[in-house]
Length: 153
Ligand code: SF4
Image (cartoon, rainbow, N blue to C red; front, top):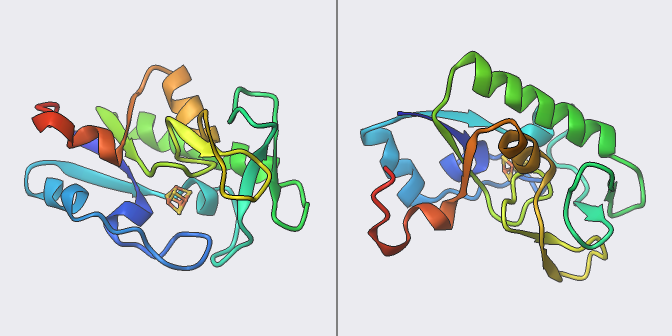
């Protein structure tokens, strides 16, 4: 299978703090699948390291919120550009599904931070996860793929 994967899960130092979020379970998929790393926030033109960003509004991304950084600057356009470019990569390479990093304002699929920068999570999606799903791609968080001997992969 061809699988689009959040670059940070593969050990690439793309996170806002310049670190990775390497996940050995995801890396082990390389033995049987083609993994394609993407970082929507970098693809959207944001630097690394970069200020933390959250989706303002308390319900994740539904298509009309704003994404602000921790200093109050509006980064929505960067997040939209990153999501659209990630969708282009998915289509270009005809990926079968995506495994994205949980809780990220771009990649989160089930929960994201609520926009108050207080560490509170709310049910909701990141900008890229939302757009990929809206366009018919199957999206999973890293933790969903490996629960209960999921035979997806
Ligand atoms: Fe990882 Fe996604 Fe954040 Fe990039 S935007 S660092 S891939 S969680």
